[in-house]
Length: 171
Image (cartoon, rainbow, N blue to C red; front, top):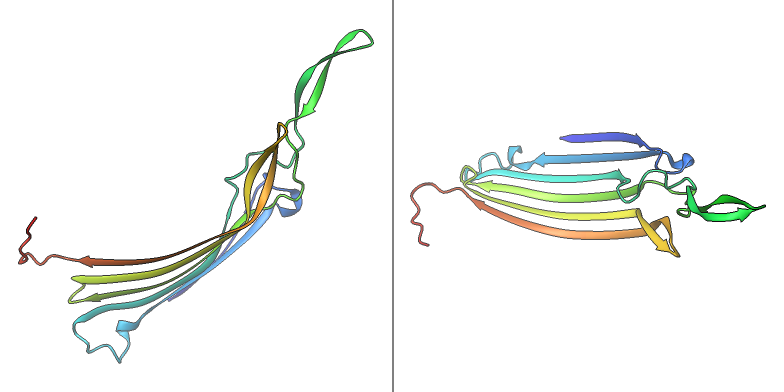
């Protein structure tokens, strides 16, 4: 089985020229047990190879209006004898702010024996985030920035057994 998805998201939280993000994904699985060379192997009830690759977008590390230069009241000074409100920047802006993009890859193998009473799953997972979004505070101003990348790798192994009712359990 092969599945492909093309997704596009838009947000005013990033700069105008990076407003829309494009996030494709593809996944496939192959049920090897259904192949002719394994059809007569009775104790094996499931043998499936899975693979997935895709991208997703995230803006959770920033708040609205981070690409706009916003101001707030800073104090009152006298101008020609009249009190005048002064304004100051709340944060530095980042006119090149773009979507945080996470690319993931996973490869897995599922197998079951004796009518799936004993099951094994192994999975390898790799994730890389580029342009990770966060805030940096320096001299009372907050600046939305992009971290170049962060990588995560993981391997998982799972074993499951379904009791038949004839086992003796001792605690």
